[in-house]
Image 1: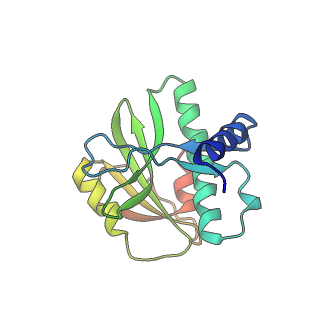
Image 2 (image 1 turned 90 degrees about the vertical axis):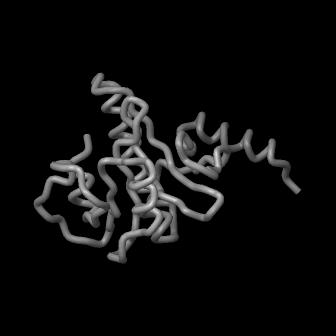
Image 3 (image 1 turned 30 degrees about the vertical axis):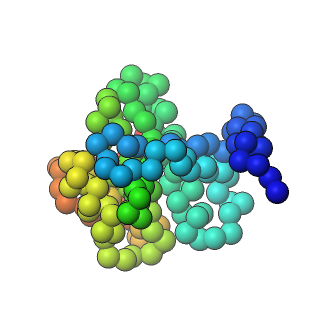
Length: 164
């Protein structure tokens, strides 16, 4: 049996080789949050077989690129995190801007009803924008960030076109 410390060392080694990256949980103002469970993503989503995992990894890579770019351009202090609590509520990604939640993103391969967890966290954390990003949806001409609003479904092509 492999120890937890051994697995952590392997993950750190892989991260150092730039094969992947970790996204840590956001827990400020989140009651019953799970604070020590990072999510690990490969940088090459083509190696992933499961469609849901591939979609989430694809969006994670693009969000990481955007967050790093915004930081490099001096547009603020940005972080990419995820949300999860002990009540099984989870949102794939939260982008923090200047230590405040800016937007939430929940990734789905196809169109579904908006995630209850997405709506819950948007309300609890008073996040201005919340998106259910749909991978298999056609591009639409729309500005996702034009005004603060309730959680909305947005095609991945539209969402990604508005990042860095």
